[in-house]
Image 1 (cartoon, rainbow, N blue to C red):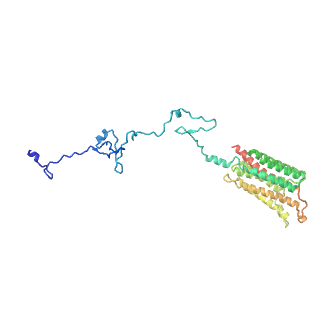
Image 2 (tube, rainbow, N blue to C red; image 1 turned 90 degrees about the horizontal axis):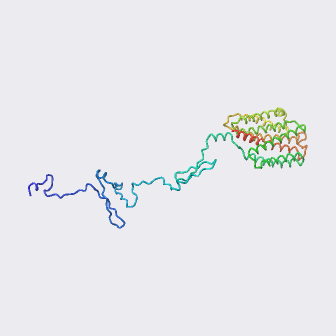
Image 3 (cartoon, one colour; image 1 turned 180 degrees about the vertical axis):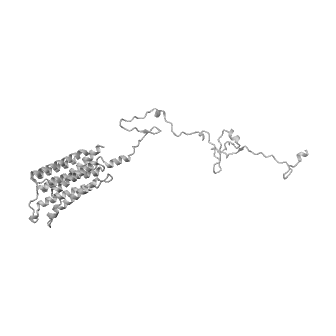
Length: 380
């Protein structure tokens, strides 16, 4: 032993010989993986140096947040490097099967990526179409005319027979009303029903005017019935089609006819000859109401943002006209000179005529309004 071998290195505690320590700087052991028999499987070392990581083909296993390292996949299982396709592969039969061809006039059904047909959504309902349908509907009040004609036709026909007797005039009035109810009950189209009932109403007004002229009476009541017929139809048509110029023209014709009736029948001069008897002031009330309705009807010349209350004024017009007709018949049956005693006994044929003219004016006016609305919608 030389002196050089016994020399103690500086900075050590003893001069004895230090054991050689081998540090595993290149690999780190993994947690052993056990198989089903409880034996440890072979552990794959984890390269730690950058050069070793680049040279190694094995996947790098890193510790997760809990500090444990994942195990290597067993043989026979797909590795993490395999890519699973998102779109499923189609079979050869599905690839060769062509898509069904839609029939003529039917929309083509869209198919999904898997080859299955997919439901095609309907196009959205545009706001312009909704506004056009609101301003000019195609079939406004479709069930109104049918139920109104059946109800008033049957009720008016029965009332005509009860109050008018079984004479020829009463039977003719009741027969016309029953025909009106039959036309309303038939399964006709919207335009055909409106055309049939409005034509029947105009024909009934013609027979009423002809009968009044043959009896030597004045045509004031016939002019009033025609004015209400046209004015009511114009008001309803204006309520259906707010932007229609034809509706405003029809209303103006009805207002002119109503003003002509007021002038020919003496105007409002009857208001200056009233006394305590109801026969003197009762007929004046419907007359004043009809004059006011003629002025209120001028509201239809407002813009298209409102219906101008067309349905309300038309309904009030029909009720006031019915009140005027029955008050006139009541005054004829109970004149003021006889102190309340009737000069004619019931049943009376004039009552049958009064009921018939009221029903014909109401249903015919509604039918004329719907006929004008259907014609305007077809021109769009």
